[in-house]
Length: 228
Image 1 (cartoon, helix red, strand yellow):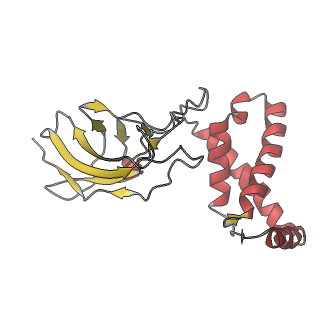
Image 2: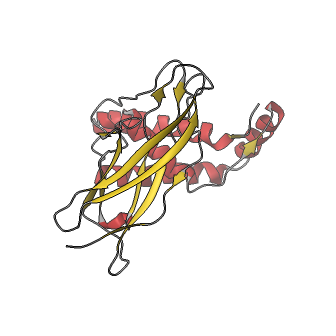
């Protein structure tokens, strides 16, 4: 058994119970979408203690401990409702559309999450209001699903930080080695055209795992736009 955060199971279960009740009472079907559910679970898990176990015995012990801590369950329910209020205020565009995952069967190259920060070279302030493209072989690289965007739009709240999680790419066989030459591109009338090229070396996996961000993040150096 691998290390497991027992709170994930508990929060998933409690979120399902609350969402079923909320969707019946308020007739908001989008609350039962997988996307809404995952956002809500993440909101709660990021705000409660974590309980890690490595065995069935540890899991049983932790379950008993949680039953003896009713306040924690009250806190979880309170956080679920707080998260629901935020979701109802700022609904993501993908809540009303099917979650189209691009998981691929067979040998694949699993690309990491690609992170970076875009700054103005004249004052080192974070860039906002521009779209950033991740390209491979001069085409936009597809993302893992429709929760991840390419192009990625930088608004003021992100403070210049962008992230991409590409879809896995088919391979010929497990163990195949390949170098992917990727490009970050920005085309905006306020700035000089921007191109940043980088390489990622990968070894093909036998199959895609349930957790798409298996590989360590690939962090780019700070990137700078030149105003016109």
